[in-house]
Length: 124
Image (cartoon, rainbow, N blue to C red; front, side, top):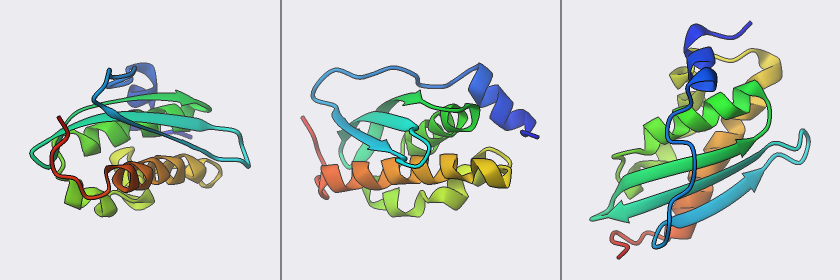
């Protein structure tokens, strides 16, 4: 049902937890299933230098949050629009149809992070 890569992210999540200020934090949720993703990121010189996540949800949502942090770490703030549901799904080697909501939740998190950063290139 799930790919080996997805199961690895679920069993050994990367970048789980939070970050202290001055990290930017966003929270997104899927009202249909109740999954919640919280992202925290620290940006220096226009790049994400630290990122952490917390997810309350299904196996796929937990794995998608982990994969998202790997996509975000080191990314330029201007590149955040490229991190969409398809990119998250590809990072997990695919998702079954009933779990595609997890990739959308992660992509919503990337969009919320971009909106919160508001184009700022340096956060002290």
